[in-house]
Image 1 (cartoon, rainbow, N blue to C red):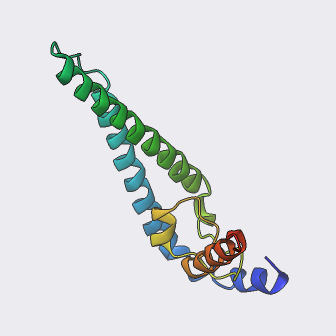
Image 2 (cartoon, rainbow, N blue to C red; image 1 turned 60 degrees about the horizontal axis):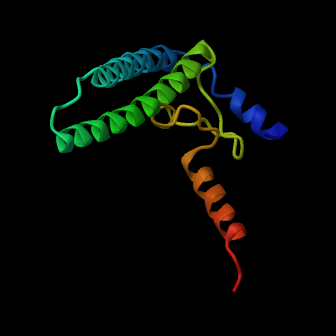
Image 3 (cartoon, one colour; image 1 turned 90 degrees about the horizontal axis):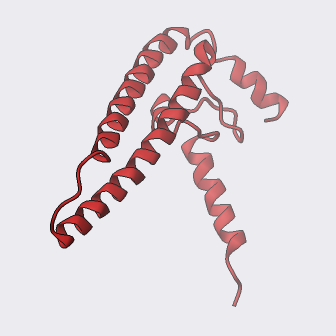
Length: 134
């Protein structure tokens, strides 16, 4: 982020103090919801095996699927907790344009470093560079 983006980022802080408290409440609610989801998914691992071979195979596949969902949930929980650890400085700014990243995006993708528009540009540029020329 260049010097102009840093000064633009600092201009938002006073107006967003009130939003921080509401955002932190929503963030903590998201964390609690993710913890409940993870606990539920981990409970699915404890089910007993089935006597029939086909039922047991289907059950084991469901357990593997629940494990994958639990891993994803645990990763999201880590990202949400890292975002919450920022405390009052929770408002993140886009690395490319310096504008604040919307709270809805921070909740949906806690580890994001760009606003939606800049991320789309970044992925588009990356896609063009990575294409093979025939």
